[in-house]
Image (tube, rainbow, N blue to C red):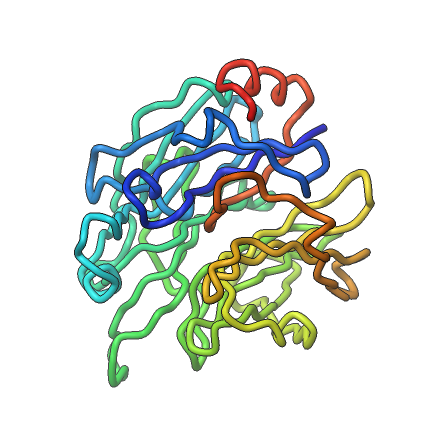
Length: 302
């Protein structure tokens, strides 16, 4: 088995597009395509940030969903959060090599100022995908707009149910990611006010089912965002990566033996290698050795 990292690299020209990197152990990464983008957007805001890749539940292929945003185009963050896109960018592939051009699908509520960092998880009980993202919206009773996590359901990533508030806290919240393990859904989200990662858990994907799960050693790390969680098969450990955006250091892996304890410990810089390009908010999925070899041959490995 191996790992595929789908990500962008920064706000420089062509940085906000889709990049691929591969790893055999989930900790040491090599860039594909000579560190150049594999997919570029010519629709919407002509940017693809925060890409999330998911293997379809029926095994028929793969989908990438991404933020339709390009800061390099010069509109700035104020416009990005208040008058940004209401769309997801959607791309599909049967083999991880040949990808459809990005298509925009409007999912956010009409009042949304942005549609950030979309992710998806397959709902075993309902046989569909829960897709969730962050939107800045001023609801009735709000003194000012607030970042919340919204969600909708889909079977095909083309048609979606009406978006609903999925996660709301006293503070702004963005960048949610979820993983299912041994009957429990674990959710990691960025507190956009305090700039650290908070955790909650649930037995199912109903929004009312989640309860806060404080993880003090994780919450003590500030200036981070873009959490992603995956299993390191060789080490039999869970790996949580967090993007150290405030210090411009890129992703930091933290590992723990069990999500039941979530005793995450950050790795030393000598224990991982993120590759030549700066890895910004993206997603990691397990792939087969055959898929690894096929991608390395098709795109070229550094």
